[in-house]
Image (cartoon, rainbow, N blue to C red; front, top):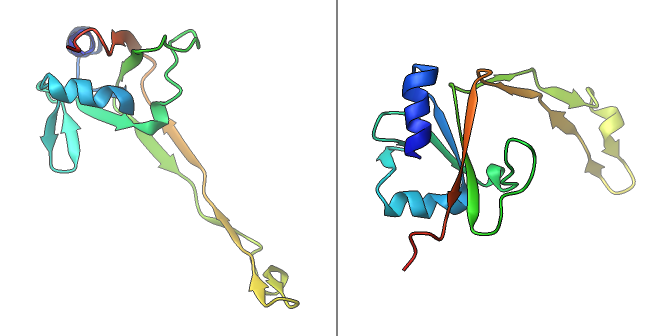
Length: 132
């Protein structure tokens, strides 16, 4: 993780985000790499850390999966999520009601578009190298 922090400080030049698969969170916590701040987690330099199952695919920059016992961590600039309006389908009540069984089916959906800077750095970490 120090490689990513160094990249954010020197090459990116600002506070960024470190993206971590959920399976690597325990290792980072064990070695005091994470600083809890309320409901958020940051690094000692103040970069935001996103821990999540959404990174479970665990693939490298070229799309290849990480070997067993390893994980890809990424650093990027801040992440911005734009969201569109809620679309309700169907838009009126009559078409959504099934009078045979008194059910109503309505779909509500919204488009989300996440974005970040073009500059992204990745590092492959060994999750087992520090295990006793």
